[in-house]
Length: 529
Image 1 (cartoon, rainbow, N blue to C red):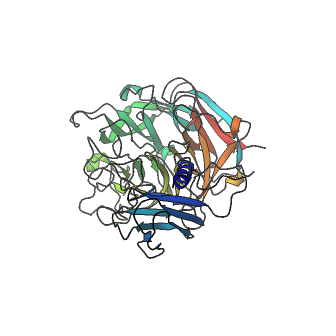
Image 2: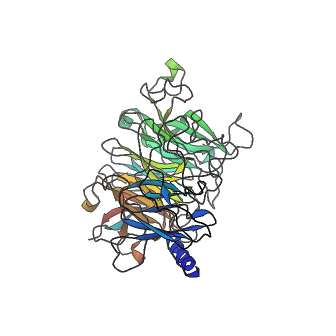
Image 3: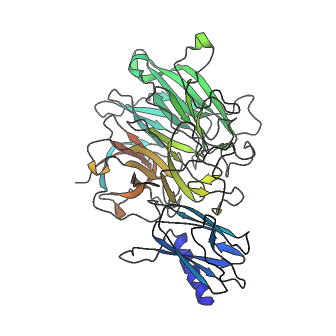
C-alpha cells in the first residue's frame, strides 16, 4: 500500500511539473499516467495526455470501485482494494468516466495532441537571431505599420513614437495621450495605451484609432475602476508624423469594474471593419463586483468578454451615431445580444491579428492553469468561464480542472476550442503574435509565432514559440531558440510581438514587469546564420 502511494506521489509530482511520462534520454513510444482511487474519488480527477498514453488506475480505497467510461469505450469491472486497471488512449478526444458502484465518483481523460506540455528541444530549424531596432521605451505594447514605410511604437504610458523609412526614431511623439489616461501603477498595471490602428485608407484620410484607459467617467457605476475609450484622431495636415490632439472623437466607452482584463489590440479586418477585443471586466473567475451571474463573458447583454466588430465609416453628421453596425454581424437581429458582438466567451483577449487569408487569431490569457490561442469565427462562443482552454473550469475551484462540464453555452450553442493550448509549467501568460508570412526565416513559414511573457515575475524568462497544424486537434508547438543568448532564450520579459509590411516579425521586451524605467526594446527576428 505504501509503495503504491509513493509511486502515485512521484507520478503526481511529475505531472505537476508538466512531465507526462518517465524521464529518459530517449522517450518511449508510449507514456504512462497513474490515477489513484482514494477517499471515494479519482485523483487527479482530470488529466490531459497525448495519444498513445497508457493510463493506470490503482484502487487504494478499502471499497470496491469501477472505472467505466460513459460512452462504453472502457470498463474495469469491479476492482478490489489494490486492484489495477490499464487502458491505452489512442484517439484525441474527451473520455468522461465514473464508478458504477458509487456514481458520484467521476473523472475525465482528455487526449490532446501538440499541447506545450514540456520544454521543446532545439530541432535545428527553430533557431533565430535578434537584431536591435530601437530602445529606450518604457513598456512597448505594439509595433505596427502605417503601410507607407513607417513603423510605430505604442508605449503603455500613453506615447506613440515613429520610426521613419530610414530607420530613424523620431524624437517628438506621434501621439501623446498620457494626460488623458488614468494614472497607471509603475509596479504592475494592465491599463494604459493598449492599441492603435490605422484606417485602411489612412494615406488619404489620415484617420487613426486608439484604445486607452481613461479615468472613470461621470455616471459610471460607483466603485468601478476606469473607463476604456475607443477614440478616433487625425494627423496634422502639414505634418504626417504628428497627430492633431484637438481632433479626438470618442466613439465608444466601456466602464471597467477592475484594473485588469482590458483586452487591447484593435485591428481592421480585410473586410474594412474595426475589431475590438474586450476582457471580462477583471478580477478573477469572471465573478464579483461588475460581473453578472454566470460571468460577463457568457452574458450577451454586455460588451465585456467579447470581440466587437464595428463600422467606423458612418457619417456622424448624417446618422448621429459614432459608429455603425455591419449588417452581417452575427447577432444584429437576435434578441438578448448586443449587435456589436462578433464572438464571445473570452477572458482577456489581449492580442489579436489577421493573416493574409483573413483568419482572426486571438490569444486569450488564461487564469491559473491554461493559456490558449483561438482562431475566432463569426458568432463563436469560446467557453470562458465554463472552460479554460480545452479544460473544464469551476469558478469556485479555479486551481483544478473539473472532470466534467457543459459542452454548450447557456443559450445552447456549442463551445469552441482553441488551436493552441499550454500549461503554466515555467510559463505565465500567452502573448499573441502573427502567422509568419515573411521570406527571411523560411523555417517559420506558415507558423503562428507567439510568446509567453515570462516564467514568473521573479524570473525574467520570456519564451518564443511557433505552432503549425498537425491534423485534427491542437497545433504542434515548438519553442523558438535565440542564438547567442544564455540558455538560447531572450532573458527579458516579452510584452508583445510586431509585424512589418514584409511579414517579418519583431519582439517587444523590457527588463522590468511594470510600466517604469527605460528598458523597453524592439528586436527584429533575423536568421541566426
